[in-house]
Image (tube, rainbow, N blue to C red; front, side):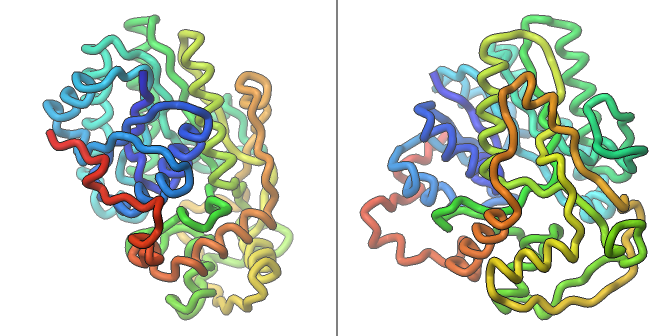
Length: 357
């Protein structure tokens, strides 16, 4: 029996694949490389020393998704795949609604056909919109401010309705806060397409010389230094959270949402300072106008995940910055830099594990 990982070549997906393989799970990875690079799969193999099946398949292709289930004994699914840039979703709302929602419906239809009813869904703290108070608990009002966030909330509602219609399903909705960092090996990390949308990869690309300076959006928020405060969580802690959620859906039926965050907020300037200490690099920045819809303060109440999943974030802000810098320093151009991996005995080409269908 195997765990299907949709979007498994992406930033959070690749780290979750590593944790699953190291925990002894068999995995099958499905990705179409819209938001990811195939080299990440080689790095997963290099870190874990384990092989796994990979399908270059778009979830919108129902026939090919069905073939993945026919060819493998799938026990449960961790669903990462989807378009994920907030700004792009504002420009291309129809693409986001069609891709993210339709692909999830197709996935659930195929799962149901094959009697696979255990699902861990990659949601987002964007479902909370502008929080009325912090820390944010799972019972906080749900309201989103952009098409990306609305796709996450709509999918959560679709999955709620699915469970109501058939209570043999077991579903965990994981609401991420702000993932940063990288695997401590420096082999896998965040490799955004184009100019980064998130703070940490922007900082690391300034540090490595790819970008001139950091833009800080707003300095007049009601916070200690005027810059926005967010809950930053190490991507490996986040990956481990998926293992704990998988363990729960494997033993119980039902549907529930869980915040995955540290419960502590850091301002943008605090993050810049922490990174400068970790990297011994100076990060030039300039203050620009705040972005519409950005909350002043946003951080999680993670106690439900600790109580019900036995999970809590372990890594501190120093480790997050050190690991993010190690990844960027070793991979200044992201996965385009192969690190001479063909000479590495653990390296294997995608043909070694790609399944043609």
